[in-house]
Amino acid sequence: MKCSESMFETDPIISEIRHRLADDLKGNMGHGQKHAAKVTVDAGALMLIEGKRAGYNKTYLRRRLLLAQCAGMLHDAKRKEKDHAIRGAEYARVLLKEFPLCPSEIEDVACAIQNHEAFKALVNINTTEGALISDCLYDADKFRWGPDNFADTVWAMVRHFQTPIPRFLDLYPKGMALIKSIKPTFRSRTGKLYGPEIIDIGLDIGREISNMIHLEFSFYLEK
Image 1 (tube, rainbow, N blue to C red):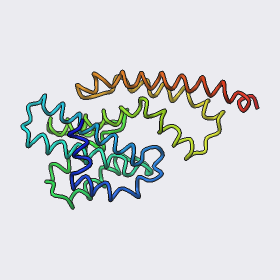
Image 2: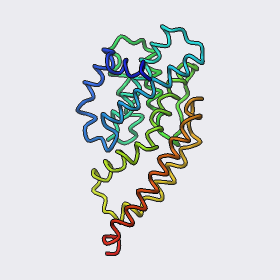
Image 3: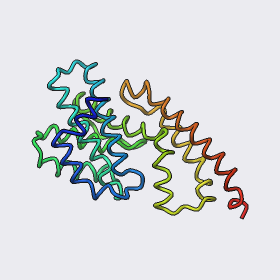
Image 4: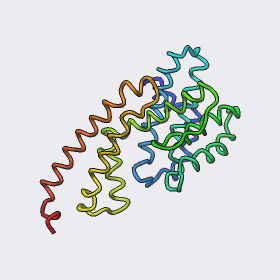
């Protein structure tokens, strides 16, 4: 994790991408700079673990770490647009041409971004190395469906859509069921090991929040 955090803070390519996205990620419905940073660091950490397991040498592993972090930073760049994963992949293909990355590396990042949504058809990736970046990005993004969802994301979306409390609670069971359905979808070996537990922790928090809202805001619910 420390190695991934260090690259996130110091690598010039990641720093420039962060700068480029600063405005785009503002007010991004709970998927802004904080979300992107967490996904980026976790995607890099997963790449380090899975890349070592795959036998990557040190130089190649660091390069793949960089690509995983590029995917992490860019995965929600077009969150506000319809089919945001597809639009994000297209954007990544254009933007990353400005950086010292080869075409195959750019394509690995773009495919990972296009594949990061749950329950969507996947684009085919021809190499195991490219597929690993896709898996690491997906799992890092879905880790956020655990405690992070109830600490940040859901409230940012409520603020954005100005959702009334009764409507919020009507939608709550469906949201909880959707989160639960993520548990069997983790893709990397490490994601499969830890992801379901992270989701369960988030679900426990979600149930406590639901109970608290029903208790504290019952006056509004009776109207």
